[in-house]
Image (cartoon, rainbow, N blue to C red):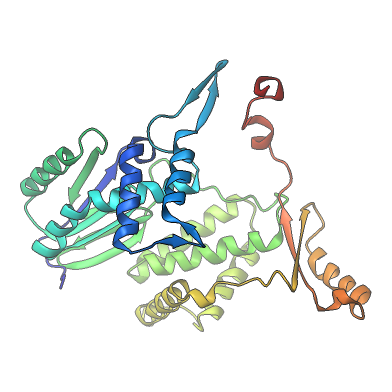
Length: 347
């Protein structure tokens, strides 16, 4: 069992250009191997051989257009494709098995990976870790290139992790290039989106900050960043208090911080790990409506539901539950980015 001690070090590893470096043939073989290990013969009635053929077709038919010429991607998968994520993850799973064994089974450390970012915690000399990195880079040197950072302090995703004389200290990590930018309050977006920004920021501050002082520092940072983006102090405080109410915390003080933080973390992990908490939609009894959100539509959904009840209560549609969703208004990015060639080039 892993235990943090004074000589525990952290190693963070990044895979360079993972999505575009995974060999297509090797990735497909990894998927086949994974399905064999899991003893999966078919998915949703589709045989595995058919799924692998479709996967191969997807990988070998990614094209992009640049400067009047079409190119076909011959290595890796398309950025942004949901399949590329699974494809790369399965390939990395088999690549990292020897590394996982070294860290977890032999060194009794911790090993976690999120797509192309990995963190390791173990008791080892820096020279030994550097030797490991050299060896790991030779395991698949044509495809997987690892770059590592070693020390008593590490940044993994958006968390700063520090070994302070055998005590774990964590806080929110902001990249040096980070700008204090949030969705401007004046932007034309649904009101619930703006409400959830300070709400989520406070929950993240509590979850990531291992001490009360670190929490207060991150809270002050969020308040200032939100203020600079047009959020009023009263609005920010109201959403912060909404977060306290959700987790039944009267107020956070230095005396009750550890207990309150444990309560927040426990509730958060229970909600994210319980599949029953994922909303299930019965499409036989539900109808979805999407509207482009414009200024003045804050109460549109409630008005829509009221009109629905007035018009359809005694009709066959009375048993249908409407769900109102919003589309964002066209923005500058949509106007400037051309996602595919014009129709003349496609002929």
